Length: 144
Figure 1 (cartoon, rainbow, N blue to C red):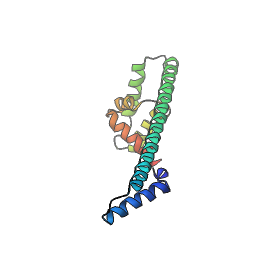
Figure 2: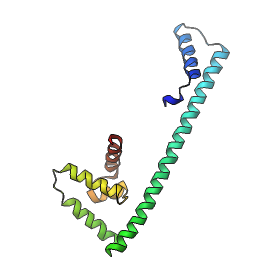
Figure 3: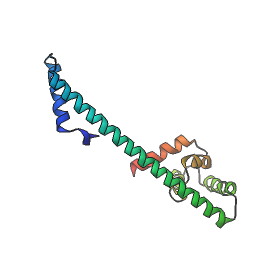
């Protein structure tokens, strides 16, 4: 966001705030310049947010496609239905000792990174809500 703070915008803001401090009205030219710079800033910020949303959607779609292909491969290799495979993952997670948080985290990361499971599916396997899994993943991504 600081990339969008241009010298012109900073000058216009300085002019506006100094005028407020001195209890005077901005001239028409100063006010127009300020409004123009603020508009440019908002437009740049909006474009940046739209680009970030597009990238996120693109990554999610790629993740979903990888999951679909991985799911098909797993079903063919194991000769099991999808429900049997998810039950197997539930048993593996249940086999992890309750106090071993690191092993639980590694298991959830394995499901997300290697098998491309969605946070909703991971939540159903580890018996947590999808929001909790989303927040945990975002926190993990932020830390790493």
